[in-house]
Length: 301
Image 1: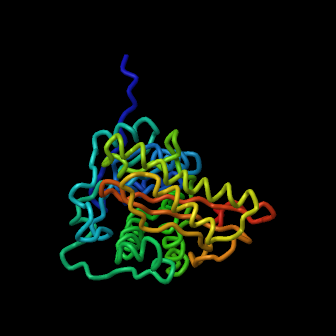
Image 2 (image 1 turned 90 degrees about the horizontal axis):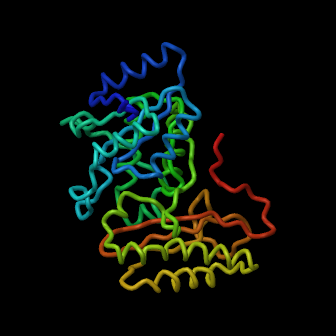
């Protein structure tokens, strides 16, 4: 007897997507959306599980968005594994998968863009100009295409969540943005599709990203409030990995992403670095021992 779960229905046009979502709504269902670029891992799967737990009908989008890649970045090499992705989504019970071609998302006359504000200009925005313009634009388009009640994103892409939350609030998009915890490998490395680019040795060395964040958290828990000293320790840990090039290592206000001089309230520690040409990011929230701040600065409603 074959017990392999059936793959979810897969559609590639906005018309098919909207028809399927409309059918789910007709029977009173709430719609969850999980936007992805494919090459799915447990981090993505955890978002689908969260949607399944909260919503009646879960849509997963798989679209490698070209507008968030700079000309020098890895668009052509970005991992694509649709068959394996569909098998993973079957195991977790996704209801619908939307896999549009680029022409379905960006028509030949496309000329309208979402320009995020200040929250998009530092960190990832400083390192990758126009990245968040592409992210915000495609997320808004996917929200308009699927019209979900709730959309699910991961904490690993913290700045992206801030950009999307700001866009949804500013443009009055009727959707709840739900943020789910970062999923990590046993050694602490945040799961990412780009981890597949790393050689076994670089993969081992990549664990220093989480080690640097953990070192910062330990210093704060021991009573050190001096951001300069904490950042120096973070960089020291990062540079212990041979061949690693630091893009940034920061302690910032969780809402504005402005640098802090002292850890007197909850802060975001964030790092970005390159190994073997692969760019990796990670972050964590840090609360000083006396802080009564909530664990997340962007709490789920």
